[in-house]
Image (tube, rainbow, N blue to C red; front, top):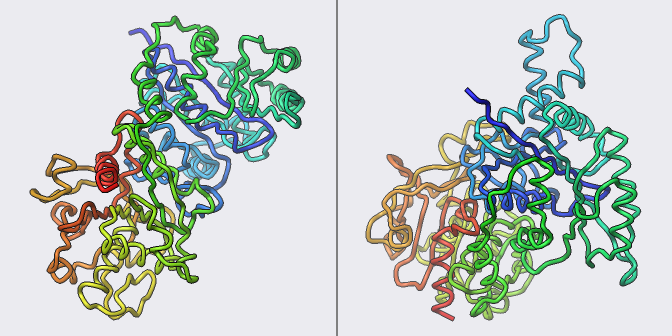
Length: 534
Protein backbone atom coordinates (compact mmCIF):
# COMPACT_ATOMS: atom_id res chain seq x y z
CA UNK A 1 0.00 0.00 0.00
CA UNK A 2 1.43 3.34 -1.09
CA UNK A 3 1.75 5.90 1.70
CA UNK A 4 0.24 9.29 0.87
CA UNK A 5 2.84 12.02 0.43
CA UNK A 6 2.01 14.77 2.90
CA UNK A 7 3.32 18.31 2.66
CA UNK A 8 3.77 20.92 5.38
CA UNK A 9 3.63 24.71 5.16
CA UNK A 10 4.79 26.56 8.28
CA UNK A 11 3.83 30.23 8.61
CA UNK A 12 6.01 32.16 11.06
CA UNK A 13 5.80 35.78 12.04
CA UNK A 14 8.30 38.59 12.40
CA UNK A 15 9.22 41.14 15.05
CA UNK A 16 5.60 42.33 15.40
CA UNK A 17 2.33 40.62 16.22
CA UNK A 18 -1.06 41.64 14.87
CA UNK A 19 -0.05 41.40 11.20
CA UNK A 20 -2.84 38.98 10.32
CA UNK A 21 -1.11 35.59 10.25
CA UNK A 22 -4.48 33.91 10.58
CA UNK A 23 -5.83 35.68 7.49
CA UNK A 24 -2.63 34.95 5.53
CA UNK A 25 -2.63 31.29 6.58
CA UNK A 26 -6.31 30.95 5.66
CA UNK A 27 -5.70 32.63 2.30
CA UNK A 28 -2.85 30.21 1.57
CA UNK A 29 -5.18 27.35 2.43
CA UNK A 30 -7.91 28.70 0.15
CA UNK A 31 -5.43 28.99 -2.73
CA UNK A 32 -4.29 25.40 -2.20
CA UNK A 33 -7.91 24.24 -2.05
CA UNK A 34 -8.59 26.00 -5.34
CA UNK A 35 -5.81 23.82 -6.81
CA UNK A 36 -7.69 20.67 -5.77
CA UNK A 37 -5.68 19.93 -2.63
CA UNK A 38 -7.07 18.86 0.75
CA UNK A 39 -5.84 21.24 3.44
CA UNK A 40 -5.95 21.20 7.24
CA UNK A 41 -4.76 24.08 9.49
CA UNK A 42 -3.09 23.88 12.90
CA UNK A 43 -2.21 26.78 15.15
CA UNK A 44 0.31 26.86 17.99
CA UNK A 45 -0.04 29.43 20.78
CA UNK A 46 2.72 29.62 23.35
CA UNK A 47 0.65 30.60 26.37
CA UNK A 48 0.34 28.04 29.17
CA UNK A 49 -3.46 28.12 29.17
CA UNK A 50 -4.86 24.83 27.94
CA UNK A 51 -7.40 26.79 25.89
CA UNK A 52 -8.81 30.32 25.49
CA UNK A 53 -11.95 29.76 27.56
CA UNK A 54 -10.95 31.84 30.57
CA UNK A 55 -9.36 34.71 28.63
CA UNK A 56 -10.75 38.25 28.65
CA UNK A 57 -11.84 39.49 25.18
CA UNK A 58 -10.05 42.78 25.90
CA UNK A 59 -6.73 40.90 26.02
CA UNK A 60 -7.23 38.19 23.46
CA UNK A 61 -10.18 39.04 21.24
CA UNK A 62 -13.06 36.66 20.62
CA UNK A 63 -13.09 33.14 22.00
CA UNK A 64 -14.12 30.87 19.12
CA UNK A 65 -15.90 27.56 19.78
CA UNK A 66 -15.54 24.40 17.68
CA UNK A 67 -18.07 21.59 17.21
CA UNK A 68 -16.44 19.45 19.90
CA UNK A 69 -16.62 22.30 22.42
CA UNK A 70 -13.02 23.44 22.16
CA UNK A 71 -12.64 27.12 23.15
CA UNK A 72 -9.86 28.44 20.96
CA UNK A 73 -8.17 31.41 19.32
CA UNK A 74 -10.17 33.61 16.96
CA UNK A 75 -7.95 32.53 14.05
CA UNK A 76 -9.85 29.22 14.01
CA UNK A 77 -12.95 31.15 13.03
CA UNK A 78 -10.98 32.59 10.12
CA UNK A 79 -9.83 29.10 9.07
CA UNK A 80 -13.36 27.73 9.06
CA UNK A 81 -14.81 30.77 7.29
CA UNK A 82 -12.25 30.55 4.47
CA UNK A 83 -11.87 26.78 4.13
CA UNK A 84 -15.38 25.43 4.89
CA UNK A 85 -13.90 22.83 7.25
CA UNK A 86 -14.99 21.69 10.70
CA UNK A 87 -12.00 21.57 13.02
CA UNK A 88 -11.53 19.94 16.42
CA UNK A 89 -9.44 20.20 19.59
CA UNK A 90 -6.36 18.71 17.94
CA UNK A 91 -6.10 21.60 15.47
CA UNK A 92 -5.44 23.93 18.39
CA UNK A 93 -2.09 23.32 20.08
CA UNK A 94 -1.09 25.45 23.08
CA UNK A 95 1.87 25.45 25.41
CA UNK A 96 -0.47 24.35 28.18
CA UNK A 97 -1.73 21.37 26.16
CA UNK A 98 1.67 20.13 25.08
CA UNK A 99 3.29 20.46 28.51
CA UNK A 100 0.30 18.72 30.12
CA UNK A 101 0.63 15.85 27.63
CA UNK A 102 4.32 15.37 28.35
CA UNK A 103 3.88 15.57 32.12
CA UNK A 104 1.03 13.04 32.04
CA UNK A 105 3.20 10.62 30.04
CA UNK A 106 6.07 11.09 32.49
CA UNK A 107 3.76 10.33 35.42
CA UNK A 108 2.54 7.17 33.70
CA UNK A 109 6.13 6.01 33.27
CA UNK A 110 6.30 6.32 29.49
CA UNK A 111 9.77 7.90 29.71
CA UNK A 112 11.20 5.48 32.31
CA UNK A 113 14.96 5.76 32.56
CA UNK A 114 15.13 9.16 30.85
CA UNK A 115 15.35 12.69 32.17
CA UNK A 116 12.50 14.42 30.32
CA UNK A 117 13.69 17.45 28.35
CA UNK A 118 12.48 20.07 25.89
CA UNK A 119 14.57 18.32 23.22
CA UNK A 120 13.82 15.60 22.29
CA UNK A 121 10.70 14.76 24.31
CA UNK A 122 8.68 17.97 23.92
CA UNK A 123 9.72 18.54 20.31
CA UNK A 124 8.97 14.91 19.42
CA UNK A 125 5.52 15.24 20.95
CA UNK A 126 4.84 18.36 18.84
CA UNK A 127 5.94 16.67 15.61
CA UNK A 128 3.86 13.59 16.36
CA UNK A 129 0.83 15.78 17.12
CA UNK A 130 1.09 17.64 13.81
CA UNK A 131 1.59 14.46 11.78
CA UNK A 132 -1.41 12.83 13.45
CA UNK A 133 -3.67 15.76 12.56
CA UNK A 134 -2.54 15.39 8.94
CA UNK A 135 -3.39 11.69 9.09
CA UNK A 136 -6.75 12.23 10.80
CA UNK A 137 -7.87 14.70 8.13
CA UNK A 138 -6.16 12.75 5.30
CA UNK A 139 -4.68 16.08 4.22
CA UNK A 140 -2.46 16.75 1.24
CA UNK A 141 -1.08 19.85 2.97
CA UNK A 142 -0.87 20.64 6.67
CA UNK A 143 -0.77 24.38 7.35
CA UNK A 144 0.96 25.28 10.62
CA UNK A 145 0.60 28.81 11.98
CA UNK A 146 3.14 29.74 14.66
CA UNK A 147 1.57 32.24 17.05
CA UNK A 148 3.49 35.14 18.54
CA UNK A 149 6.65 36.76 17.18
CA UNK A 150 10.12 35.55 16.28
CA UNK A 151 12.31 35.54 19.38
CA UNK A 152 9.49 34.92 21.88
CA UNK A 153 10.70 32.61 24.64
CA UNK A 154 7.37 30.81 24.69
CA UNK A 155 7.52 29.62 21.07
CA UNK A 156 11.25 28.87 20.75
CA UNK A 157 10.84 25.14 21.38
CA UNK A 158 8.00 25.00 18.84
CA UNK A 159 10.13 26.63 16.15
CA UNK A 160 12.84 24.07 16.94
CA UNK A 161 10.27 21.30 16.45
CA UNK A 162 9.32 22.84 13.10
CA UNK A 163 12.98 23.02 12.09
CA UNK A 164 13.28 19.31 12.80
CA UNK A 165 10.03 18.57 10.94
CA UNK A 166 11.34 20.46 7.92
CA UNK A 167 14.59 18.48 8.01
CA UNK A 168 12.90 15.10 8.44
CA UNK A 169 9.95 15.45 6.08
CA UNK A 170 11.69 17.16 3.13
CA UNK A 171 8.31 18.16 1.60
CA UNK A 172 7.94 21.20 3.82
CA UNK A 173 8.50 24.91 3.44
CA UNK A 174 8.64 27.95 5.71
CA UNK A 175 6.78 31.17 4.93
CA UNK A 176 7.67 34.35 6.79
CA UNK A 177 5.08 37.09 7.30
CA UNK A 178 6.81 40.38 7.98
CA UNK A 179 6.06 44.08 8.22
CA UNK A 180 7.60 46.70 5.93
CA UNK A 181 6.82 50.14 7.38
CA UNK A 182 6.69 53.33 5.36
CA UNK A 183 7.76 56.29 7.49
CA UNK A 184 7.55 58.81 4.64
CA UNK A 185 5.59 58.10 1.47
CA UNK A 186 7.80 56.11 -0.88
CA UNK A 187 10.47 55.43 1.77
CA UNK A 188 10.08 51.79 2.82
CA UNK A 189 12.16 50.30 5.61
CA UNK A 190 13.26 46.70 5.09
CA UNK A 191 15.60 46.42 8.09
CA UNK A 192 12.92 44.92 10.43
CA UNK A 193 12.36 42.18 7.85
CA UNK A 194 16.10 41.56 7.51
CA UNK A 195 16.62 41.34 11.28
CA UNK A 196 13.66 38.99 11.75
CA UNK A 197 14.90 36.79 8.93
CA UNK A 198 18.38 36.63 10.46
CA UNK A 199 16.86 35.68 13.80
CA UNK A 200 15.04 32.81 12.10
CA UNK A 201 18.26 31.83 10.33
CA UNK A 202 20.04 31.68 13.69
CA UNK A 203 17.47 29.03 14.67
CA UNK A 204 18.27 27.01 11.56
CA UNK A 205 15.15 28.18 9.70
CA UNK A 206 15.40 29.67 6.22
CA UNK A 207 12.02 30.79 4.82
CA UNK A 208 11.60 30.18 1.09
CA UNK A 209 8.73 32.67 0.75
CA UNK A 210 8.33 36.13 2.34
CA UNK A 211 4.97 37.88 2.51
CA UNK A 212 5.20 41.59 3.31
CA UNK A 213 2.46 43.36 5.25
CA UNK A 214 2.58 47.00 4.18
CA UNK A 215 0.69 50.21 3.60
CA UNK A 216 2.35 50.69 0.18
CA UNK A 217 3.30 48.09 -2.41
CA UNK A 218 6.96 47.12 -2.37
CA UNK A 219 9.13 49.16 -4.68
CA UNK A 220 11.83 47.46 -6.82
CA UNK A 221 14.63 48.56 -4.46
CA UNK A 222 12.83 47.22 -1.39
CA UNK A 223 12.21 43.90 -3.09
CA UNK A 224 15.87 43.62 -4.14
CA UNK A 225 17.05 44.34 -0.59
CA UNK A 226 14.76 41.74 0.95
CA UNK A 227 15.82 39.21 -1.68
CA UNK A 228 19.52 39.87 -1.20
CA UNK A 229 19.62 39.93 2.61
CA UNK A 230 17.03 37.22 3.24
CA UNK A 231 18.30 34.75 0.60
CA UNK A 232 14.91 34.59 -1.09
CA UNK A 233 14.33 34.92 -4.87
CA UNK A 234 12.52 38.14 -5.81
CA UNK A 235 9.70 36.10 -7.36
CA UNK A 236 9.12 34.55 -3.91
CA UNK A 237 8.47 37.91 -2.22
CA UNK A 238 4.81 38.91 -2.11
CA UNK A 239 2.82 42.05 -1.28
CA UNK A 240 0.11 42.02 1.40
CA UNK A 241 -1.08 45.65 1.43
CA UNK A 242 -4.17 47.20 2.96
CA UNK A 243 -7.17 45.94 0.97
CA UNK A 244 -10.88 46.63 1.04
CA UNK A 245 -11.94 43.15 2.17
CA UNK A 246 -9.92 40.43 3.89
CA UNK A 247 -11.54 37.93 1.51
CA UNK A 248 -9.74 39.64 -1.35
CA UNK A 249 -6.31 38.44 -0.15
CA UNK A 250 -6.36 34.99 -1.83
CA UNK A 251 -7.19 36.72 -5.14
CA UNK A 252 -4.53 39.37 -4.58
CA UNK A 253 -1.86 36.76 -3.87
CA UNK A 254 -2.90 34.72 -6.90
CA UNK A 255 -2.45 37.77 -9.13
CA UNK A 256 1.18 37.67 -8.00
CA UNK A 257 1.48 33.99 -9.04
CA UNK A 258 1.61 32.85 -5.41
CA UNK A 259 -0.05 29.46 -5.95
CA UNK A 260 2.35 28.35 -8.68
CA UNK A 261 5.39 29.45 -6.66
CA UNK A 262 4.24 27.63 -3.51
CA UNK A 263 3.43 24.44 -5.41
CA UNK A 264 6.87 24.56 -7.00
CA UNK A 265 8.48 24.89 -3.55
CA UNK A 266 6.42 21.94 -2.31
CA UNK A 267 7.12 19.91 -5.47
CA UNK A 268 3.43 19.51 -6.25
CA UNK A 269 2.13 19.54 -9.82
CA UNK A 270 -0.55 22.16 -10.45
CA UNK A 271 -4.05 20.99 -11.34
CA UNK A 272 -5.20 24.47 -12.39
CA UNK A 273 -7.09 26.91 -10.19
CA UNK A 274 -10.76 27.68 -9.54
CA UNK A 275 -11.58 30.85 -7.61
CA UNK A 276 -14.47 32.07 -9.79
CA UNK A 277 -17.22 31.73 -7.17
CA UNK A 278 -14.95 33.28 -4.53
CA UNK A 279 -14.25 36.20 -6.88
CA UNK A 280 -17.96 36.76 -7.53
CA UNK A 281 -18.70 36.94 -3.78
CA UNK A 282 -15.82 39.36 -3.22
CA UNK A 283 -17.18 41.60 -5.99
CA UNK A 284 -20.54 41.75 -4.21
CA UNK A 285 -18.80 42.63 -0.93
CA UNK A 286 -16.90 45.48 -2.58
CA UNK A 287 -19.79 46.83 -4.68
CA UNK A 288 -23.09 46.02 -2.94
CA UNK A 289 -26.48 47.12 -4.27
CA UNK A 290 -27.41 48.83 -0.98
CA UNK A 291 -25.92 49.33 2.48
CA UNK A 292 -27.62 48.47 5.77
CA UNK A 293 -26.66 50.06 9.07
CA UNK A 294 -26.56 47.52 11.88
CA UNK A 295 -25.97 48.32 15.55
CA UNK A 296 -23.91 45.93 17.66
CA UNK A 297 -24.58 46.75 21.28
CA UNK A 298 -22.02 45.24 23.63
CA UNK A 299 -19.55 45.99 26.36
CA UNK A 300 -16.35 44.97 24.58
CA UNK A 301 -16.81 47.33 21.63
CA UNK A 302 -13.48 49.09 22.24
CA UNK A 303 -11.85 45.88 20.96
CA UNK A 304 -13.69 45.06 17.72
CA UNK A 305 -12.03 41.62 17.55
CA UNK A 306 -14.25 40.65 20.49
CA UNK A 307 -17.13 40.31 18.01
CA UNK A 308 -15.25 39.31 14.86
CA UNK A 309 -17.43 36.27 14.05
CA UNK A 310 -20.60 38.38 14.18
CA UNK A 311 -19.01 41.00 11.97
CA UNK A 312 -17.93 38.39 9.41
CA UNK A 313 -21.27 36.54 9.51
CA UNK A 314 -22.93 39.83 8.54
CA UNK A 315 -20.45 40.21 5.66
CA UNK A 316 -21.31 36.69 4.45
CA UNK A 317 -25.06 37.24 4.69
CA UNK A 318 -24.79 40.69 3.12
CA UNK A 319 -22.88 39.33 0.13
CA UNK A 320 -25.53 36.62 -0.22
CA UNK A 321 -28.31 39.23 -0.69
CA UNK A 322 -26.02 41.77 -2.40
CA UNK A 323 -26.11 44.26 0.48
CA UNK A 324 -23.25 45.88 2.29
CA UNK A 325 -23.23 46.24 6.07
CA UNK A 326 -22.11 49.33 7.97
CA UNK A 327 -21.61 48.61 11.66
CA UNK A 328 -22.46 51.04 14.43
CA UNK A 329 -20.72 50.04 17.65
CA UNK A 330 -22.67 50.96 20.76
CA UNK A 331 -21.04 50.60 24.17
CA UNK A 332 -23.96 49.65 26.41
CA UNK A 333 -22.27 51.09 29.50
CA UNK A 334 -22.84 54.49 27.82
CA UNK A 335 -26.58 53.84 27.93
CA UNK A 336 -26.28 53.54 31.69
CA UNK A 337 -24.65 56.99 31.86
CA UNK A 338 -27.50 59.00 30.40
CA UNK A 339 -27.68 58.32 26.65
CA UNK A 340 -30.97 56.85 25.44
CA UNK A 341 -31.65 53.92 23.13
CA UNK A 342 -33.56 56.22 20.78
CA UNK A 343 -30.58 58.56 20.40
CA UNK A 344 -28.27 55.70 19.49
CA UNK A 345 -30.57 53.40 17.52
CA UNK A 346 -32.90 55.70 15.54
CA UNK A 347 -30.64 55.74 12.44
CA UNK A 348 -30.09 51.94 12.43
CA UNK A 349 -31.80 49.32 10.25
CA UNK A 350 -31.35 46.52 12.78
CA UNK A 351 -29.74 45.65 16.10
CA UNK A 352 -27.69 42.74 17.37
CA UNK A 353 -27.15 42.16 21.08
CA UNK A 354 -24.21 39.73 21.34
CA UNK A 355 -23.02 37.38 24.07
CA UNK A 356 -20.99 38.33 27.12
CA UNK A 357 -20.44 37.73 30.81
CA UNK A 358 -20.91 39.80 33.95
CA UNK A 359 -23.32 42.53 35.00
CA UNK A 360 -21.55 45.55 33.47
CA UNK A 361 -23.56 47.03 30.61
CA UNK A 362 -26.51 44.64 30.92
CA UNK A 363 -29.11 47.29 31.79
CA UNK A 364 -28.07 49.16 28.66
CA UNK A 365 -28.62 45.99 26.64
CA UNK A 366 -32.03 45.47 28.23
CA UNK A 367 -33.10 48.99 27.22
CA UNK A 368 -31.96 48.32 23.62
CA UNK A 369 -33.95 45.08 23.47
CA UNK A 370 -37.06 46.88 24.72
CA UNK A 371 -36.66 49.78 22.31
CA UNK A 372 -36.22 47.44 19.33
CA UNK A 373 -39.32 45.49 20.37
CA UNK A 374 -41.53 48.55 20.77
CA UNK A 375 -40.29 50.33 17.64
CA UNK A 376 -40.41 47.30 15.33
CA UNK A 377 -36.66 47.40 14.71
CA UNK A 378 -35.31 44.00 13.55
CA UNK A 379 -33.57 42.40 16.53
CA UNK A 380 -31.18 39.45 16.80
CA UNK A 381 -30.09 38.44 20.30
CA UNK A 382 -27.19 36.01 20.52
CA UNK A 383 -26.70 33.91 23.68
CA UNK A 384 -26.83 36.61 26.37
CA UNK A 385 -28.77 38.65 23.79
CA UNK A 386 -31.62 36.12 23.98
CA UNK A 387 -31.55 36.19 27.78
CA UNK A 388 -31.62 40.00 27.68
CA UNK A 389 -34.72 39.95 25.43
CA UNK A 390 -36.46 37.58 27.86
CA UNK A 391 -35.62 39.81 30.85
CA UNK A 392 -36.95 42.87 29.00
CA UNK A 393 -40.16 41.03 28.08
CA UNK A 394 -40.65 39.75 31.63
CA UNK A 395 -40.34 43.24 33.08
CA UNK A 396 -42.38 45.14 30.48
CA UNK A 397 -45.05 42.65 29.38
CA UNK A 398 -45.43 40.15 32.20
CA UNK A 399 -45.33 42.64 35.07
CA UNK A 400 -42.40 40.88 36.76
CA UNK A 401 -40.86 43.87 38.49
CA UNK A 402 -37.17 43.36 39.11
CA UNK A 403 -36.96 40.32 36.81
CA UNK A 404 -33.37 39.45 36.06
CA UNK A 405 -30.76 36.76 35.65
CA UNK A 406 -29.20 35.27 38.76
CA UNK A 407 -25.87 35.94 37.06
CA UNK A 408 -26.51 39.66 37.58
CA UNK A 409 -28.70 39.65 40.69
CA UNK A 410 -28.71 36.58 42.94
CA UNK A 411 -31.61 38.02 44.96
CA UNK A 412 -33.90 38.93 42.06
CA UNK A 413 -37.58 38.29 42.90
CA UNK A 414 -38.10 36.83 39.41
CA UNK A 415 -35.11 34.76 38.23
CA UNK A 416 -36.35 34.33 34.65
CA UNK A 417 -32.77 33.41 33.73
CA UNK A 418 -30.95 30.95 35.97
CA UNK A 419 -28.00 28.54 35.97
CA UNK A 420 -28.41 25.30 34.08
CA UNK A 421 -28.94 22.55 36.70
CA UNK A 422 -25.72 20.74 35.74
CA UNK A 423 -23.76 23.97 36.23
CA UNK A 424 -24.71 24.52 39.87
CA UNK A 425 -22.10 22.16 41.34
CA UNK A 426 -19.25 23.12 39.00
CA UNK A 427 -16.37 25.06 40.54
CA UNK A 428 -13.68 24.98 37.82
CA UNK A 429 -13.97 27.68 35.14
CA UNK A 430 -12.09 26.17 32.20
CA UNK A 431 -14.06 24.10 29.66
CA UNK A 432 -17.01 23.60 32.03
CA UNK A 433 -19.79 25.49 30.25
CA UNK A 434 -22.32 23.90 27.92
CA UNK A 435 -20.07 23.95 24.89
CA UNK A 436 -19.94 22.97 21.24
CA UNK A 437 -22.44 21.64 18.71
CA UNK A 438 -25.84 20.57 20.08
CA UNK A 439 -29.06 19.42 18.43
CA UNK A 440 -32.10 21.72 18.46
CA UNK A 441 -35.75 20.80 17.89
CA UNK A 442 -37.47 23.56 15.91
CA UNK A 443 -41.22 24.05 16.30
CA UNK A 444 -43.16 23.75 13.04
CA UNK A 445 -45.10 26.78 11.85
CA UNK A 446 -42.68 29.26 13.41
CA UNK A 447 -40.45 31.84 11.79
CA UNK A 448 -37.41 29.81 12.88
CA UNK A 449 -38.78 26.74 11.05
CA UNK A 450 -39.30 28.82 7.91
CA UNK A 451 -35.74 30.18 8.09
CA UNK A 452 -34.02 26.85 8.65
CA UNK A 453 -36.57 24.78 6.68
CA UNK A 454 -36.02 21.93 9.11
CA UNK A 455 -37.41 20.52 12.35
CA UNK A 456 -33.91 19.62 13.52
CA UNK A 457 -30.81 21.81 13.36
CA UNK A 458 -27.36 21.79 14.95
CA UNK A 459 -25.55 24.89 16.20
CA UNK A 460 -22.72 25.74 18.61
CA UNK A 461 -23.19 26.81 22.22
CA UNK A 462 -21.20 28.50 24.98
CA UNK A 463 -23.32 29.23 28.06
CA UNK A 464 -23.99 28.46 31.72
CA UNK A 465 -27.39 30.12 32.10
CA UNK A 466 -30.80 29.31 30.57
CA UNK A 467 -34.38 30.52 30.51
CA UNK A 468 -35.82 29.33 33.82
CA UNK A 469 -38.31 26.52 32.95
CA UNK A 470 -40.59 27.65 35.80
CA UNK A 471 -41.38 30.89 33.92
CA UNK A 472 -41.80 29.58 30.37
CA UNK A 473 -45.61 29.23 30.40
CA UNK A 474 -46.13 32.77 31.72
CA UNK A 475 -43.53 34.28 29.37
CA UNK A 476 -45.27 32.73 26.35
CA UNK A 477 -48.74 33.95 27.34
CA UNK A 478 -48.66 37.28 25.47
CA UNK A 479 -46.87 36.55 22.19
CA UNK A 480 -43.37 35.43 23.01
CA UNK A 481 -42.68 32.03 21.43
CA UNK A 482 -39.94 29.60 22.38
CA UNK A 483 -39.54 28.01 18.97
CA UNK A 484 -36.54 25.77 19.60
CA UNK A 485 -35.38 23.57 22.47
CA UNK A 486 -32.89 20.85 23.32
CA UNK A 487 -34.36 17.42 22.40
CA UNK A 488 -35.97 15.66 25.35
CA UNK A 489 -35.40 18.59 27.72
CA UNK A 490 -36.93 21.90 28.71
CA UNK A 491 -33.84 23.93 27.75
CA UNK A 492 -35.06 26.77 25.51
CA UNK A 493 -32.67 27.55 22.66
CA UNK A 494 -34.62 29.74 20.24
CA UNK A 495 -37.23 32.46 20.76
CA UNK A 496 -39.22 34.77 18.52
CA UNK A 497 -41.94 37.38 18.83
CA UNK A 498 -45.26 37.25 17.01
CA UNK A 499 -46.30 40.30 15.01
CA UNK A 500 -42.80 41.77 14.77
CA UNK A 501 -40.85 42.19 11.48
CA UNK A 502 -37.99 40.18 12.99
CA UNK A 503 -37.38 39.65 16.69
CA UNK A 504 -35.38 36.53 17.47
CA UNK A 505 -33.06 35.29 20.17
CA UNK A 506 -30.73 32.31 20.11
CA UNK A 507 -29.08 30.63 23.08
CA UNK A 508 -26.52 29.34 20.56
CA UNK A 509 -23.97 31.26 18.48
CA UNK A 510 -24.98 31.09 14.80
CA UNK A 511 -22.00 33.29 13.92
CA UNK A 512 -19.69 30.34 14.65
CA UNK A 513 -21.07 28.27 11.77
CA UNK A 514 -21.13 30.94 9.06
CA UNK A 515 -18.63 30.96 6.20
CA UNK A 516 -18.18 33.13 3.12
CA UNK A 517 -19.61 30.55 0.74
CA UNK A 518 -22.20 29.17 3.21
CA UNK A 519 -23.66 32.02 5.29
CA UNK A 520 -25.70 31.09 8.34
CA UNK A 521 -29.44 31.25 7.40
CA UNK A 522 -30.37 33.21 10.53
CA UNK A 523 -28.08 36.11 9.57
CA UNK A 524 -29.43 36.03 6.01
CA UNK A 525 -33.02 36.22 7.30
CA UNK A 526 -32.10 39.02 9.70
CA UNK A 527 -30.57 41.17 6.96
CA UNK A 528 -33.47 40.46 4.61
CA UNK A 529 -35.82 41.76 7.30
CA UNK A 530 -33.62 44.83 7.82
CA UNK A 531 -33.62 45.51 4.07
CA UNK A 532 -37.39 45.10 3.87
CA UNK A 533 -38.03 47.46 6.78
CA UNK A 534 -35.51 49.98 5.43
